[in-house]
Length: 450
Image (cartoon, rainbow, N blue to C red; front, side, top):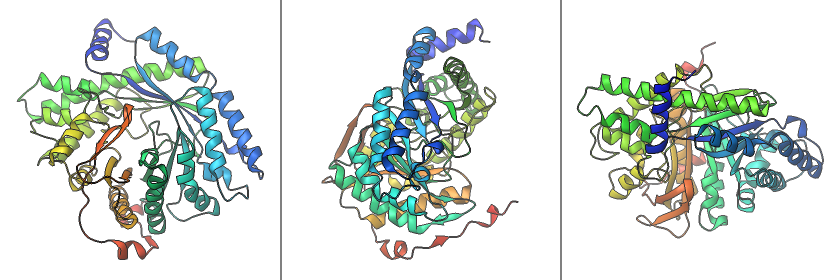
């Protein structure tokens, strides 16, 4: 139960500090929708999603109005489509994406995730067809998000998949004209099955038939809390963040359980990630600067982010027995006003962002690079980020946008939560020979833990 003090604190966080439920995401298994005929499979997918998610959006609005808690997004994640589509003989899987898009539009959700493949140890025929279909599928749809898992700590890194994804990202950028398709495409290492955040959400094979996962946010709340302890040692900083994360997660738990009850769908997890928005005052960079940094990206940023990520997890885990997803601090450049400013000033670089991903949630996110960057360079960036995930036994990802016709210093504007990305330079040099080797980078020694 919530006491009066907690209710008043929550009201202040909502009214003044940008606290919100970032997403209610319904995960839906499509394993029973597989069929040898693609039209039949697509019809079954559409019918199942629209049946199970019929009341998702309306329930979200009801909870939002009754409790006074903003719920920004209502979303759906589904079983990786490569697992479903492999039973049909079609070469192009775009019709599956169109079925997902039609269902998402009918249900009124803003994104649906799961046009995905898991290829960390190798490809099935269905995996290859899905990856080849990604550029067409993302350009032909509005709300479909795609992800491909190319590495795990147990399997190592599938460098053939890494090379293929560099080409896929380039093709998607060029086909969409403005690179927007790439904003809906994530390449993972150690992808999780219950992530409610887009663009990387999918409903894993180990998940139930249908489930409700909730993603909370609140970087503005954390930044506000740190303003009251200026000059205090890091022990106090960590404790303050933990207490704040606890309150944020408690709100997420309340919404998740209420949505679960009303929809008669099991409650899965609360993802307590600090997910920023382009709005001023809702920035992870602001938190880092409240710790004493003049600008995100300067020396000390990685240490500050490590403290933040750890304290958020420690505080959240005490507030809910079902914390999952990615849970930590996100650093998407285009979606964070402070990160945008730091990147435009030249203090925050691609190399520094890579270092920061060693200690935060996920990885290189919503980063725009010049449109003439080669597919091999993009693959090499993916390989570096996958190596960080594999060696550190954590989820890492790359959502990178080679912006057609754009150069360093230009901007790419996607609007809404996706924000605006300054085009950042990549490190000079050529990685083509490295990527051309292919094969698999073996799993690290510490993966042998059975």
